Length: 238
Image (cartoon, rainbow, N blue to C red; front, side, top):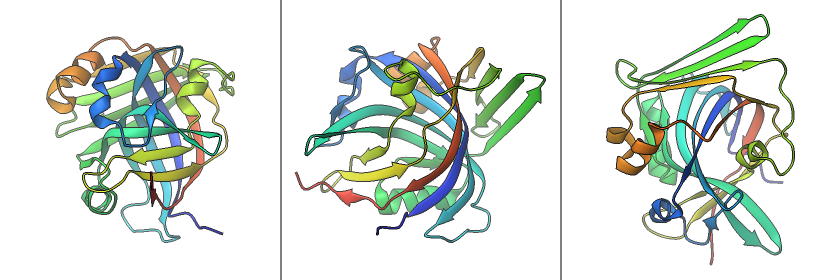
C-alpha cells in the first residue's frame, strides 16, 4: 500500500473566490486537464490557512512543523477510466520557510515563494475571527469573521465545489504533468459574515489577477479543516 509523502493538519482555511475569464488560466493549465467550471463560470481562490503537525515521510522537521500558507489556485478536472478527478492547480504558493519553498520548487516545480508570514485567530462568544498576513512588513492581509457552527456544504453548492477536491496537478516546464492525490474527510464550512483583503496585488500576481483581487469576491468560504495526507505524485503518460 502506498504511503503518504506528507501528513499534516490543514486548519482554519479562508477561501476568497473570484470569477475570471477562462482564457486567463489557459497559460497555467497543465497538459491533460481541462478547466472545471461551476454554473458555467471559472473561479480562482485566494486561500490562507495553517499547516499544523506536519510530517514528511513520517518525520517532523524542526522549525517546519507549524506554519502559514497563502496560495492562489484554480480548478481543473481530468477523466480517468470513467472517473472525474476534480483537482486544484496553484498559480502561486507562499510559505514563511525558505527550505520548504526551495525543496518544492526543485523537486516538484510547485510555484512556492518564501516571505514573512503571520496569523491571528480570535474567539469571541459565538464569533471566530481569522487573519493571515504576508510580505515584508505584512502589506498583504486577509481577514474573515464567522459566526455560529460550521456545516457540511450542500452537494452541488458553490461551497461544495470550492472545498471538495482530492487531486492536484502541476504544470512542469519540461516533461509531462504531475498528478498527486490528497486524502481528507469532508470539511465543515461557514459562509463568512465579513471579509477584508488588504494590499496592492498587481505587482504580486500580475495585472489580471491583481486587479480582480481588488474587487469584492464572489463569495468567501471558511473551512474548519482536518488531517490530510498527500501522496507521492506521478507523471501523466498521456
